Image (cartoon, rainbow, N blue to C red; front, side, top):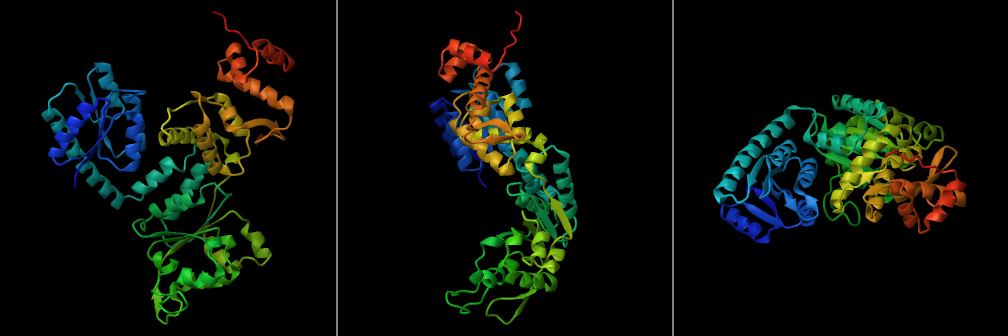
Length: 458
């Protein structure tokens, strides 16, 4: 298998020459001349190694090194530079570079460096394969917890502890409850990939999306010719998930007619395809999720009590984001970093007031809503700092922050003045310019709303 190498250097002739040399030695080599081109290439294909110049237009090579080591931890980086000093070398190695070469260097030097890296990568991959085989915490689990299910609050730590407990008992069915956008499927995947069945299928099904006419076919499969359109034999979800996990999202929305058949399949672990006569033995774990109160649905005869008892052997409830505001800061930082790379923008600073404002917001859409808010803010932000104005969040009402249009004019005006002053480091001239008014007009409004600035002594 060829080693995939990305050369990121703004000297086009040098990058092309190095590419030609490495291609002759049977490496798969690509080049980029700007940070934007480099990140775009990283998004398009996986690399084993990056050869990174320390000085690039618009972005420091050390900053790029930090980002790629965080976003692509399995890729190694060799730093090259014609201007490096010992402090730069030390910093590069601390930030995760595997080697450092100073320009001009001989071709044999880079070849030896790559060969050393290749040996390290081979040993590292062997180690990771052994670790995945013998550890409950698989590579996939680490990725999900580290990059997606982020939180520092006690409720989230308890959720992860319960998920780890559920993973140890592969035959135990699990019911995950929580509002929309809290990450129920992520927890289901964590349970699956931390279990002994992690190498088996994980089959995710939206229970409310299956139409009545295809209920049995989708879950049980069918044989060729069993009905119009059945031109081939087809496996259903039960067979696809055989040996692994069947994740039933929005289980409370499952049609009542299917619930009895699902219960029988869970109890007997035997099914028949539509139109077939042979019984098929299956074995799977059910992880179900819902944002409804299932007990209320049972009382109104919309959900079967016996099925509920089968599904909730172990229940994990994910609290909404508004009940764990301490998780907002780490989530915000992660999403800002993620979208800065995805949108090819420098990572902006985060205004302290923004975090406090977000903590007061109700977040009906939970983590999914915060993610969308950050993406939108990153697209439209043209400054080096993210503030509440970039999130279109303003004003308090009944102890909660509201989004969208605030119809209280004075409240909106006061909030905009505070945000402009904060954005400009409390420089009144700059704040007035940002607001599109004169400095005298700004001062009058500040007096009106009793906004004062404490001047620091020189």
